[in-house]
Structure formats: structure tokens, C-alpha cells
Length: 319
Ligand SMILES: NC(=O)c1ccc[n+]([C@@H]2O[C@H](COP(=O)([O-])OP(=O)(O)OC[C@H]3O[C@@H](n4cnc5c(N)ncnc54)[C@H](O)[C@@H]3O)[C@@H](O)[C@H]2O)c1
Image (tube, rainbow, N blue to C red; front, side, top):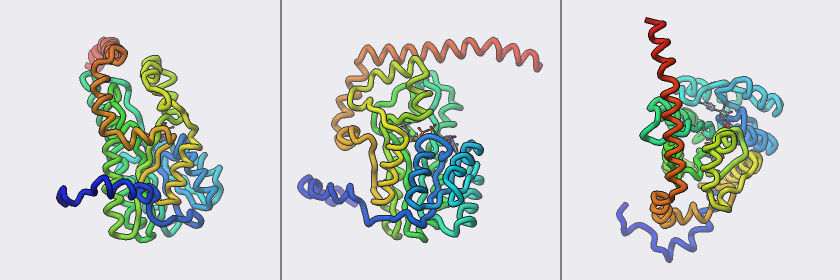
């Protein structure tokens, strides 16, 4: 492709509604849907939603008892699979089990995700960076890759769960923002590639959803609350897991290239290029942001200093 092939603004604007609508529709009745991270939060709500729409659901979660609890509420067309999305061999086997059980896989939702302990890049434990990348990015590949032959056979649909964090500022939680931006690109590439073989893919974005993840990052942590206060209205609006799941479920039916919930994030998502130039500049100057960064760094360093005597002590004990 060369630059001359890019659409002009005059071509772009009338094409927008069709681009949002996506391709033809997908009726969930009788279809098989694999959802990762479906033992809790948005994944669980999506499992309930897709089951209510008539799909059979494979409920995959690292927390086996949570997966079983979700599957039990859905009845006999649901199947619990304990597996860690970061474990490539386990995911290959999990996908094979879903196919053996139902004979097909129409839809895959790579939803499992984790957040890092708050830290700046300078103060971050490298193992924490690797853990988030292993689940949020490599885990998406491990979920989607083995399922693709089945999804293509079925002319199905893949959803990868990104976040508004893919394009919003990323201080003090960079592995999360980095992986969500990568997942967005993964989903865009996948959509173009699958179009050539008769299947579809989309990226799901959420703002703030009322789940355990949000409680752990924004509510239960004093610094998380300070970060939350930096979010301006209407971006600080919270939706329920059920509302987030409904946006994904409707996106699956529409084979939508992207879903964003709540809708208040849509203008920012569309205009992000220009907005982020200004926003990033502002954030580097904002005293409130600097203060939060200093507090995060001070807390990480204090926790590390408090741990060190214990580590030395236990090394001495082992030695
Ligand atoms: N909650 C939000 O505000 C929000 C906003 C934007 C995007 N998201 C994204 O939506 C997705 C779901 O988030 P949520 O709020 O429901 O989270 P949650 O923490 O409430 O639930 C996540 C589920 O994933 C499971 N999980 C975690 N690591 C796993 C692994 N390695 N393998 C398999 N399962 C694993 C957990 O056991 C849990 O059941 C995540 O990808 C998250 O990044 C959430």
C-alpha cells in the first residue's frame, strides 16, 4: 500500500457508518462461544449474556472453582475449563477440549486480563512487567491462535478485549496500557486477515467497569482513588459488568470491528490523535499528576526497603 491509497477525508466521512456497523450478522443460537476470564467480572456477565442468547459457552478461567460456578449457573450447555491463558500448551489443550466437547467453535473472546501493582517504569519490578505482558498480550495470542482453524471453519468471530487504556495516558500502570494498546493492534490485524478467509474479528474497549479489577485498582487503594480523581467527567462514568458484556454481545451479533462502552469514550477514541498531543503535554506539566507519581514512587520504594531486611534475614537463615 502506498500513501496515495489512503482515503481522503471526503471519502472517509460517508464510509464511517458502514465501518461501525461491520459485516453481516451472527446469530448466537446454537453457536459455541469460548470466553477466557469468564469466572468473574465482565467475562462472567458475557457468558451469561451469550448463554441467554442461545449459545453454548466454554467458561475458561485460571480460577477453576470460579469457572465451575459460572458454568453451573448456565446449565448443561456450559463447560468449565480451568486454564492459565499465559500457558501456551494448556491453552492448546483447552481449545482441543472445547472442540471435542461441542464439535465446533464459532466465537472466541480473549477477555482474561490483569493489572500490575502501581509503579512507575523506573521503580517497577521487571517480573511484574513480564507477568502482565504474559497474561494480557501473550495470553491473547495463546487463546486466539489455536482456536483460529475452528473459527475460520465456522465463519465465526473473534473478540479481543482491549481498553480505553489503549489510548488514554498510561502513567503508573504502563504494562497495562502497553498491553492493551498491543491487543488493539492485534485485533485490527486479525480483522483484516480473517476477512480474506470468511471470518471476522473486533476489539472491545471499556472505560470504567464496576468489577473486582476496578475495586482493587481505583477504590481500595488510596493512590488509586487519587488517580481516579484525575479522570474528568464524563470519562469517570462507571458501568456494570452486565452493561459492558451487553456491548460485547451486541458487537458479536453485528460482527462489529469495535465496541466501546460507555459510549462517552467514543469521541475521545475517534479523535485521540489530536487530543493526545495536547493531553500528554498537559499531563507532563500538571502538578497534581506529578504529585501522584511522586507518591507512587515513594510507596514502592518504602515497600521495597521494608522487604529488604526480611529478604536478607531469610537468606541468612537459608545460608
Ligand atoms: N474493569 C474495568 O474497568 C475494565 C476496563 C477496561 C478493560 N477491562 C478489561 O476487561 C477484561 C475483564 O476485566 P474484569 O474487570 O472483568 O476483571 P476481573 O478481575 O473482575 O475478572 C478477570 C477474570 O480473569 C481471570 N484471569 C486472570 N488471569 C487469568 C489467566 N492468566 N488465565 C485465565 N483467567 C485469568 C480471573 O480469575 C477473573 O475471573 C480484562 O481484560 C480487563 O483488562 C476492564
